[in-house]
Amino acid sequence: MGGAYVSRSTFRARRVIVDAHSAPLDDATVVVEDGVITEVRSGIRGATDGPVIDVDGLLSPGFVDAHSHLRGISLEEHGAGARQFEAWILSLSAVTTLDPGDEAALACAELLATGVTAVQGFVDADPEGLGVEGARAALRGLEATGIRGLVVLGFADRALGAPEPPEGEWAAVPRTEPTITPDDTAALVAAWLSTPSAPTTDLGAGPIGAHWSTDALLEVFRDASPSMRSHTHLHESRHHRTWLTGERSPVDRLSAAGLLSERLSAAHGVHLTGSELSRLAATSVSLVHCPASNAALEVGSAHVAEWLEEGISVGLGVDSQNTGAPDYFDVMRAALTTSNSVARPLSAEQVFDMATVGGAACLGIPLGGRIAVGAPADLIELDLTRAGVADIVEQGTATAVRSSWVAGARVVDDGSPVFDASEARTRLRAALNDDRAEREARLVRLAPLLDRITSIAGGAA
Image 1: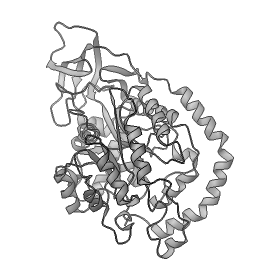
Image 2 (image 1 turned 30 degrees about the horizontal axis):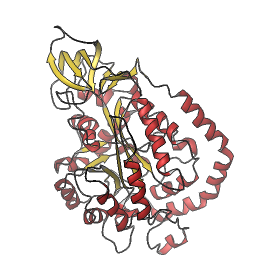
Image 3 (image 1 turned 135 degrees about the horizontal axis):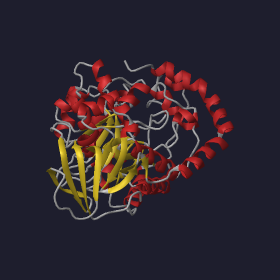
Image 4 (image 1 turned 135 degrees about the vertical axis):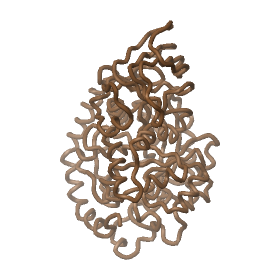
């Protein structure tokens, strides 16, 4: 685990950002006991028990990456960079298979370095890969860094490469046959949920997307556990509503399977209708906005202000679409700037709320994303002095992150994660290099098909 656990500690900060909408506190004290904030008060003097941590910069709630695929090596380095969505999905079949534990460890260390203290990792349970054992390796890699996490095992069993049925030009696209059944899924979910995990880690399972799932598969997640959190992709591409000819929409199918509840979060939501948003709000489903990924994969711009007006809890996701080490501040700015292309732009305060409180809601973290009594002590120190929320969103960069704590334990010190991911990075790059010739050959063979799918599927309109 990343940092050393301390039962009680006192933070004395020149400025504290309590949450997105409250006035900052100057010269304030935050007391942490057993990983939870027990006191927030004005003034930095007075008696203290346990270690005292003086924060010269700004103390803020840690950020939440509410949708990650825990990739330590960018897809750009695999040669499968961002492109039109349906073609991009198929291009993933050519990437190098890497150790999921090393990938998760490197990905989470890099997230910590950019101010993220909690992440929702979505791991594919493809049994032709490493299945549950691969997910367990990813879990161990995540936990080694000390980050707080919800790791969700994702499944799909239908229409993976082309719509069903593949009509018109889609008929020429080779079909990708599913390799998993609902019965397999039920057994794998049960095995996954029995996996031991750290106190700061939770486990969940869900459909990768309702448009890639049979009804029987969706029902597995309904029946798995009454307390299990779930996650999915929802209406990311404009094609997902009609991907299964003659079937109900993904929202309708999730509803029919009994999956719309406060335990579900869904990523992207670019092509949700007003009535669908109302249904998600009524059932307390959370949504995750992935602005940088949406732009990179040409799926369109989500109308996030409408989500918020419906009362939906909204988080922010990096979606592992970074071309190098992630910068969560870039994602916050992307949410701010891309919202200007739709009818109702977002404010910096709304974006910061999504990055903290909203993201915590997507992971099911009670009182998460704020500095308040009863909240988890997931904190970051930014190399800023008199800044406010708008300054953080509009001007901050990953280089501003000086220290981070998860449940009161230090996980970033002097700008660097306490966990050393260099060996994981070395092993991943060696594996990537060893597979270079074969990977490039796979991409060359796949290129004509990817171009054809791009032509068929088109853009986000």
